[in-house]
Image 1 (tube, rainbow, N blue to C red):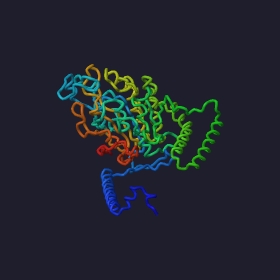
Image 2: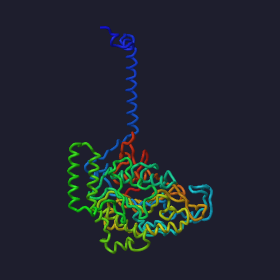
Image 3: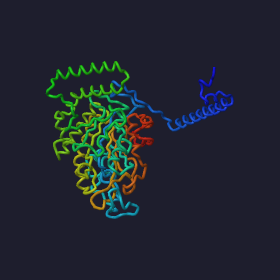
Image 4: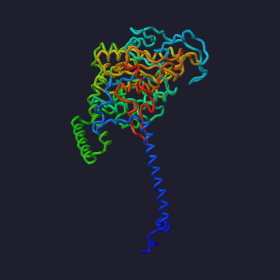
Length: 498
């Protein structure tokens, strides 16, 4: 056999004994190096990820079915009352006597320029603070009904955030990232736990009567999680779209069409049994079918007793207050039915608002904050009292929150307070948290978090913990990374746990 007919010149050289030994030596060395590097990579991965992810066991045919958490939970459901625009902590729940002493002055160490321009002088609270309840917690007359519930609240006074811009602030608080495209808190929870309610969405976002908040649907979106876990947004005035059967189609024809679709979908699933996306779509359509009967019943508020309407304020005050009060009743009804996450918005406007459509009071804070408080105070306090009276607070965690605080000094216009990411106050109540308790402190001016500072990551980690979820293990593999609500940060605030 003439080897030159079958092998190239380079191939014939490899058959030479000396060349073969030389190349084999290099190859074996490379294999050894690769093995060493692989071992080092595994060691580094183990060191950096002591807690491996826990994937929820999701049945594609029943993506909303209830699932167990990582450990026994104090809370089964969550109500989030979110106030877009940044509520002034120094005018509501964070009592700072130094502001009264230094009113009209500008002590050293405070910035000359803030988010919207030059800063003015220290301003005392625009509303008087009074002690509330047995705890004697000082809260302002801006929100007297909520203040009256201070003995049920756990105040977190030392929150701080990464941004002073509203869209990014809303994103960060609700998704853990300032950028768009990440799953919301509610999506993470329903992805992990599903819902005990089979004929309503697992996660409902009740938008303000005036519309969406600044970051819009990103506040309750699913991001890169499966679409089944995004929030369904509707409110007492605007039910979910496209649930009503067209008048041109009879009920019998509608039923026959649905039966046919179920048979066709079933056959398709038999042909492609591993198609999880198809199963999820079918489950979504089936839920929509159930909602055609469950949602109209849920939104029929006229059957509520007159005493409930008076307590919530559905027939008093401004039209916005009456509509928000109806949203609060809707929130209670959803929680009664077992909906896992209800996010109730008090404020709106994707283009701004300047204190008119949300809490963003850059000017005339005395008037604009008062407008928002008139809408929010009575209905929200009634909702919390109602939940407690019905025993729902025994297994429901309530979160009252906003994206950041406001400055202890005025803007140069002399009537408004600028954004303050350095410290702000949020409230926890209900299942699993201490009552009549305050955690953390801002400095004497309410300018920076000073004692036991709390990051938003910590706050979200604590909420997940109360739901029986380890924030370090609740993750989703996306674009080569294990993503979490708390990114690579966060610690549970154990001091607030009951």
